[in-house]
Image 1: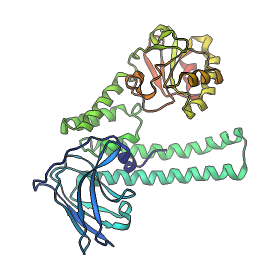
Image 2: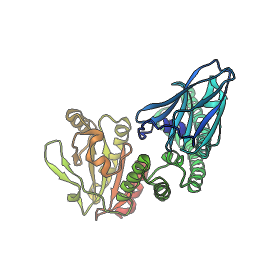
Image 3: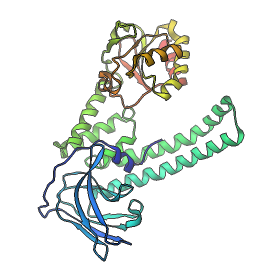
Image 4: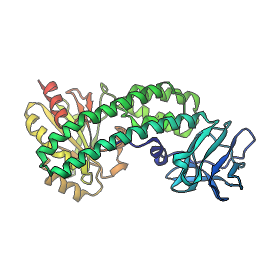
Length: 374
C-alpha cells in the first residue's frame, strides 16, 4: 500500500538547518478560524524529528505572522500539536498566506503564494484519493474472507479476482503521477511524490527529476542525496553487470557471486527477521528444486545480525543454496551496492553476470526462468 505524500514527507530524512534571520524577502502569515490565542510553531523537517525554527501567537482575530526566520528551500510544517499541523514547501522569496480551521489544520488549510506547496498539495490530494479507493477494495476483500471463512486455496482464488481492480487503480494513479512529475521536473515537491513510484520500473523518470533538481538546487543536501540514489540505481540497472558480492557463509567460508558465472543466478536478499521474506521462501525453494538441474543457482544474501537466528532460519525453511552475510543488517555493504530499499528483494542474472530482471517472485519468477533457461 502506498503512503500519502504528506506521510512520506513527514517520515523522510531531510537536511538539518541553522537559524536564518528573515531579511524581508520572505513572508509567512495568515488567519486561523476558531482560535483562542494559541501559540503556533514553524518547524523544518530535519532528520527523524522536526526542527523548530520560529513561533508566533495568534491575535484576537486568529491572525499570525512568522517574523524571525528566512527559509531555504525545504519541507516545513505549521504545528499546533504534534498531531495537528499543516505541511508546507517553502523557499526564500515566497510571500505565503495560510488559512484554515485551527481545530483541524491538516484537512482544512489553504495556501497562497507558494507554488511548491500548491504542487505538494495536488500530489497529496491525489494520493489520498487513490488510497481511499485501495482501502475500500481491501475492506471488501477482508469482509469476504471473514464471512466465508475460506481455506487458503479459495482465498488465493478470491485474491486473484481482486488483484485486477487493485492493479488497475495503482497503474492509473501511477500514470497521472508520472505525467505530473514529468511536467514539474524542477520542482522540489516532486522529490517526495516520486518516492511512491518503483525506481526500477521508472528509472528514466528518476533520472529526469535528478537532472532538473540538480540543475536548480545543486547545493541542496536532499537533492544531492537523491542524485546519489539515482546514481546507485544506474549502477544496478537492467542490462548492466551485477556488482560482485564476496561475503562469508555460515561456516566461515567466503563465497563470491562472480564464482557462479556460467549459470542463471537469482540473488535473493532476505533476513530471518523479515516476515514477508519467510513467507515468500517456499516459492523460492520450489523454484530451486524445479530449475537447479537446468543451469539455475540462487545466491542468498542475508541482512541478519544474529548468526544463530540466520542459521536457524536456513534450516527451518529448507534452504540448500549458497548463503552469505556480513551480519550487519541494514549496515551491510550490499545495501548501498544494490540500492536496496526493502526486502525481500531479488535480482536475476544471466550466465554472464548481467542483470536480467529484479524483484521477481512466485509465478513471475518461474515464468522468467522457463524463458531464459530454454
